[in-house]
Length: 87
Image 1 (cartoon, rainbow, N blue to C red):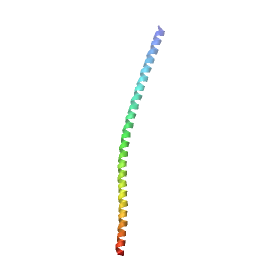
Image 2 (image 1 turned 90 degrees about the horizontal axis):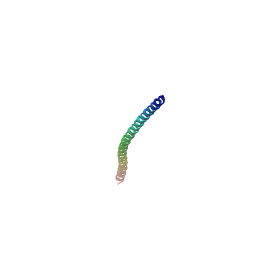
Image 3 (image 1 turned 180 degrees about the vertical axis):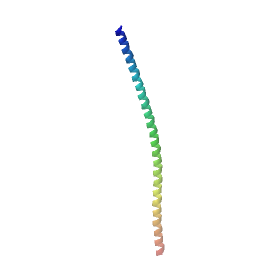
Image 4 (image 1 turned 120 degrees about the vertical axis):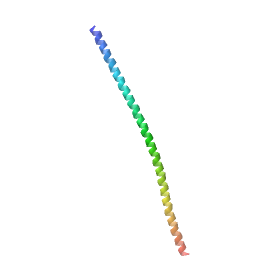
């Protein structure tokens, strides 16, 4: 009879270990899902920032073009003034 109790205690211990292990697996799986959700959110935020940076870059390119246009206009104006003084 002692052997039966010993075996049943072992079964209970093994059952408890399995339940504990299952709980840990569930906890880890929940953490993995939470990490994946966080990564997805960060990916969306980075994508939004990338789009904003693209728009800023386009604005800066326009600004540089306007700056170059102004330089060209100034040069042309100087040429016109130089030509007008010769006439």
